[in-house]
Amino acid sequence: MKSHYEKSFDQHRTKKCPVYLLDQYGYVPIANKRIVTKSVIWPVENRFITADPQLYPTSTVWIVFSNEIVLSWLRANGVFLHEPKIASFFFGLKIPDIMSENGKHRILMVSDFFFPNFGGVENHIYYLSQCLIELGHKVVVMTHAYNNRSGVRYMTGGLKVYYVPWKPFLMQNTLPTFYGTLPIIRTILIREKISVVHGHQAFSTLCHEALMHARTMGYKVVFTDHSLYGFADVGSIHMNKVLQFTLADVTQAICVSHTSKENTVLRSGLPPEKVYVIPNAVDTAMFKPAPERLSNNEIVIVVISRLVYRKGADLLVEVIPEVCRLHPNVRFVIGGDGPKRVRLEEMREKHSLQDRVDMLGAVPHANVRSVLITGHIFLNSSLTEAFCIAILEAASCGLLTVSTCVGGVPEVLPDDMIVLAEPDPSDMVQAITKAINILPQIDPQTMHLRMKKLYSWHDVARRTETVYDRALRCSSQPLLERLSRYLTCGAWAGKLFCLVMLIDCMLWQFLQLWQPDRDVEVVPDATLTSFRPEEMSWDSETLR
Image 1 (cartoon, rainbow, N blue to C red):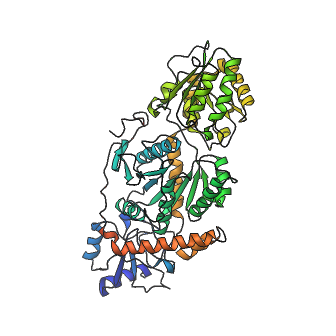
Image 2: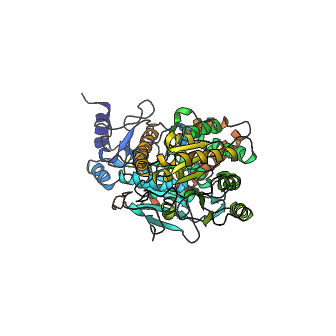
Image 3: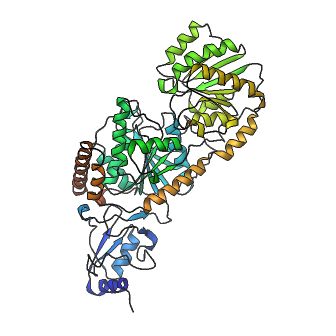
């Protein structure tokens, strides 16, 4: 006896009943189904996927297509083909979860912070993308233009970067436009056949707008929070409300430490079960100890950081003179630039420490190791920190770390590899003294080998891949259900967020009519040599 699916197919062959062809930008009334291109005719258990017979007639079959081979097969078997049809999102129809033929993801990384800018977020996106490419996924990065760097660029391993023509407005962030980025984001999503959108950093305007537009278009979105924020000051209150709006409709979220997870959940109201903790990592092939162990006759303390208030530059102004007074054989090397550099130079002049405090200025990431291996101790004075990749880089080079005990820093290294102190000048001086005393017990090569086992970007990529898998297994919600979640964001803010999303949906529908998806040229995939962290580091030569 023939099944409902077989009967439905027979009707199509004999009666020329309509078949609605949908790509990943259309809607299909089936939830929790993963449809793979190579088995598009028998997607699940060698059967047709058919609409709910209680809602649609048995002669209506919804098929996902992505290539001409499938279309030719259908035409050869007498199936009448309709053009791709988009159902109204107000009726609760679900978008299918679609991946490429080999079951791999197509990921769009979005952030205002990327190369040629340097920092923890930039490193995270770059190394994570490279390792995901090595796992067989397609990764595309979207960021704003930097100076004359605009358009499409390719990095190591075939990593494609869209430098969209938006200039930074404040602290490397683009000016919020709400809807100005919708056309270009939609075009990139269609051109690259993206299945998952991954935004980085709560302070990134481009990230928030991309996640909002992607959810409007039915894509699964993942958000990674890299920083900690307070709850009392005006800036934090504003940022927390924006984050609450973005995460109200996010599919999954990632934090880089357990402290960061608690902070994000409290700020955004996101259910804890939707937030995963995946720490940062370090390229141990790039950050190696010096070939020969340094002499302890002169102790060199290295500081590499942005010289800003949040990184504790004011704390260094008070700590360095006292350490130099207590320990005549100690010398400081400070790498980094920022508005607080003037205070450090004034301190050096005031206490006549020109021969004991070296100010290097901004240090390119490719030269960080060469600075680290000149020292014995790495000093981190941050006042707030979700994780701190700089500590990993220093430990991988064999340096003993002294750090303020803030945020997620206590989670980064084992107790015998780091000396923690309260963000207080006297406590910091005591911690540095303790580190100097235990320095003879530290073996840089042993520390480096331990770091290789503790942290790996390939492990981060595999764990992030699991989050993508779970995100694609989540069922999509109709617009009305999504709007109900925005209403919980506040008496007035909730209504404002709903209005913003409704306008976004209407603009998207207008773009669908103005330029249908089929009119956007799809970019062919290119196969390039896979990335090996031990073979290539991120430096100024990468994009030349």
